[in-house]
Amino acid sequence: MAYVTLVVWLRRRTPRARRALLLTLALCVVLPVIQQVVVTDREAIRGALGEMVAAVEAGEIEPIAARVARRFQVREIDREAFLAGVDRAMHRYHIERARLGGVEIEVAGDTATVRFTASGYVTSDMYTGDAPTAWTARFVLIDGRWMLAEVEPRRTALFRFDRLEQLIP
Image (tube, rainbow, N blue to C red):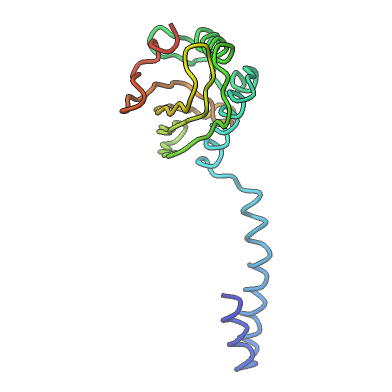
């Protein structure tokens, strides 16, 4: 766009073309700054997911706990039971190359439904290899931060779980 505006100004050399060129150049400077400063809800949620996946790979429960809402509840599993189950799993399974995929985010006000896959290379006394998983989560906006309020596994051909209780007894 800046190139087109420059060509128009070079051909016409009118005050109007000059103003258009200056405005275009100003936008070329301002828009990248705005993109760095403004974070959309979807970007914030994806960032929260990324933080949690990195924490799982590092075996650290604190960053995960910082993103789980106090009112987290999936049937009988509350926040404390969920975090204890995640902590047990991280001690039982060593996960490397953890990554997110297929992230789909639908935001409706202060609530978001997120469908995603997560995978990594798992090593344990029972299994060693790639572990693809699929999930549906609900995030809620609390004090300006997107927090995990619910999460459920989704059954796939390679991931046979569809209830959180199957993974966190």
